[in-house]
Length: 187
Image 1 (cartoon, rainbow, N blue to C red):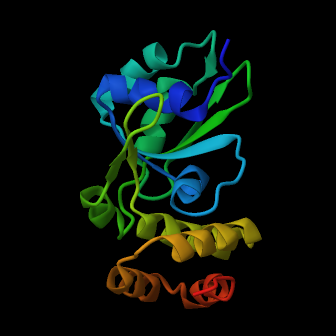
Image 2: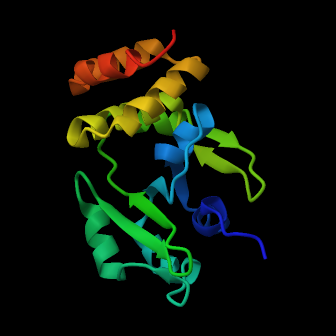
C-alpha cells in the first residue's frame, strides 16, 4: 500500500467536488523554492454555505477529524482569520483551511492561480507572490525563521511580479520582514 500524501488526502476531494481552493504555505513554497518536510497543507478555500454540508462526505468521520458544520459556518462568516483543520486519523496529516476572503491580495491571487500537474491530480497553486506575502505576515506574527528560508528559496528560483510585491509589502507594512528575507538570498 502506498503512503498517503497531502494532495491525495485533502486536495483530491476538493477537486472532485468542484470546490474552489488554492494551495499556499509550505507545500507551495516547496514547489516554488526549496523543498522541506511538512505534515500539513495550507489551503485557501472559497467555500459557499451550500457546500458546507458536502464536507462530511468528502472527509468521512471514520477517516478524518472535521469540525461540526455549524463551526465551519461560523468560521466561514468571519471577516478575518476564518480557519479550521481537517486531520487524517491514521497518519496525523493535517489540512489548515483558511476561509476569510478579505485579504487585500486575495482577488489578485485568485486571478493568477497556477494549475500544476501532480501524480494525484492537477492542483491549484497560489501564485508565489501571494505565498511570500503570507509567509511575511506569519513571520511578523510568530518569528519563525522557516518562513524567511521559504521566502528566500522562492526569491532565488522564481521570476516575481516585483511591482505587485512592493505595493503589497508597503500596504501591509511588511518592509522589515521583506528585508530580513532578502538578506538570506544569493540574488
